Image (tube, rainbow over all chains, first blue to last red; front, top):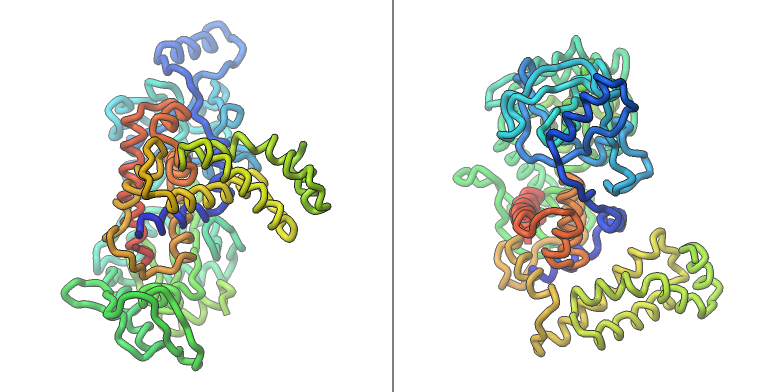
Length: 324
Length: 186
């Protein structure tokens, strides 16, 4: 049964995930709005010793802040806590002792008020985090339950035909471009790109037209055909996506005459598509990050849209990204 | 005793390794076996087999985390035993419920054929989990790795049972969609 296969596969996931889950526990405490407010007044009026105001809570609906209408803010996640130094690099899970307690000294300058989000936080005041006074990436929202860290995300999806410049403009690139990083696998920074190479990358990625997801699928099917010389995995015009003509395990001979086996044609197609792929992260001065996926096997990149590259551009990028 | 000392005993082929492991990790492994089997005799059998399996595999293995290493062995042995004795239809354990829930993540649960390699599937599940908010991720693992009951998970995280069930329901749907998107659908 497939559900048993899935249960077995879950049993083989990374042990770190399992260990983290075993260590995790939500802190049990009542959220009392007025207790939090009273604590602030105690600090302000009486100059009392700085005490924890409240703990973080989880919210599911992202918040929109006045003055930052192009972006959304969501509750901070574990790995982001590490990024902002509010959870130790070696800490795993949000155990009681791992929870960062937001105090009065963390509350920075006023940023604005929440104009969209969960009902109970609309109208809440938003502050900078004093540790990162110039960053708009992280903020502290004064929710009815207490103070919470929120982190930005930018829900932009380009329409077909739109230029890659549209997404760069939202982030204020290239003027605000502070850092360009290349990551070969999830969560692992490999190196930074600077100087002329950075300019060259940006130049190549700019001014491209969004061709949409169908173009990406077509190229994936073409790549499959070029490699294995069969039509077991093709682009279906009606469906607007790739479909398998053969189900189950397959075995093919590739261009180099080597035998390649896989669970299905789509598994092998995906492997081809992802060959030498990597992520490029563009970071703005105010801390916003744009993730770009680079797929040299099909000469494309994704940056809230699907963009095509020429052979020469792909060669240049491969060199800069050290994918040769 | 520290994990590295216990592993050291295994490596030295000192049989006290088994008793030390049993003292330190007996309750942890028993809980996993109980979640799956809900039968004390079967739990005992699985625990003894777990220690034996550890004895046979360490060395050559040197687990980074002894707890998870043992937990994984117990989980596999318990699920195998559950399958072997399924016909008896004992109630109480979480396995049937969990399997029924996981049916929602596959396209046609009655079909035994699968078109995805196990390694691909595991990798896709890991990717899916790493992308989840921490608490949701942990809730999912507690349910589908450790097979904790919904009630137990709710108590651990201080949330209601209905909220826990709702989180799991949404995650199963998300996992199904994610596996399809990743070309790893079952």
